[in-house]
Amino acid sequence: MRRWLALLLFAGAACAHAVQVTDDRGLRVDFAQPPQRIVSLLPSLTEFTCALQACGRLVGVDDYSNHPPSVRALPHVGGLEDARIESIVALKPDLVLAPTSSRALERLQALGLKVLALEPRTFGDVQRVLALLGPVLGTPDAAAVWRGIERDLAAAARELPPHLRGTRVYFEVSSAPYAASESSFIGELLARLGLRNVVPGALGPFPRLNPEFVVRADPQWILVADDDATRLPARPGWAGMRALREGNVCVFTAAQGDVLVRAGPRLAEAARLMVRCLRGELAGQGATR
Image 1 (cartoon, rainbow, N blue to C red):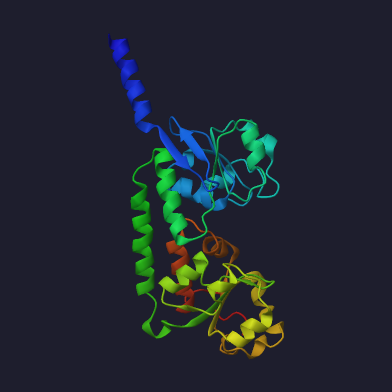
Image 2 (image 1 turned 90 degrees about the vertical axis):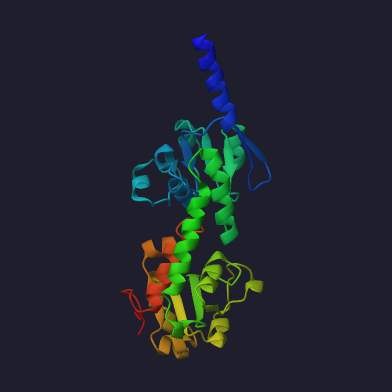
């Protein structure tokens, strides 16, 4: 009798956890129990997993996952274009978290691995991915993680001095130049802080711009990675822009850049970095003078 009772309780617990979700490909993925061996193929998905208290279940990550520091010691298995399939299979994952843009998706599924394809790109996506992954991982209230992000974002916005509200800014994500527009999650961050993005959302989230566009927009502040900051004045016409004339340039380190360009649970940290720069509290501010 005791054995039967134990089996019934076990079956009841398994049924209680049974979860069915739809990923960003529109495919249904079923989980009878929380996955215990997870491979993540996108830095933001790695960070989501850890934010939901499941970092210890990661057995492998992509080559660019570096936060929290504990994941740096895990096997790294490639990136979007060059995921090492054999290395992933050898880790025996019961779940692979991958972006929809990964070239490895079909091959991994063909090999019998359970794949959940998620690619957060907006504020709404961050909230949605948290809400979806929480039940899958069987972790505590994912909504509480989102509420913490929202609370810390509001706190960061309050730290921006009133005279800087409405400041016109240009955020460069790559030196082509590619910029973050109003429709990107970075643009959403800027708006939440009360800043004005000079790149309209109609151009797409991360458009490649003609450098003359930025000259005409004449932003009051430029936010850029440290690799590209010293080359800004050499671009035709850029030296005369207000931001460069006045030394209003936020220069972010590679580690800070990782925080800023990932649509994940560190959104509030990204907001704080922006505010600290505009307040003159980052070492790289005005480095192009």
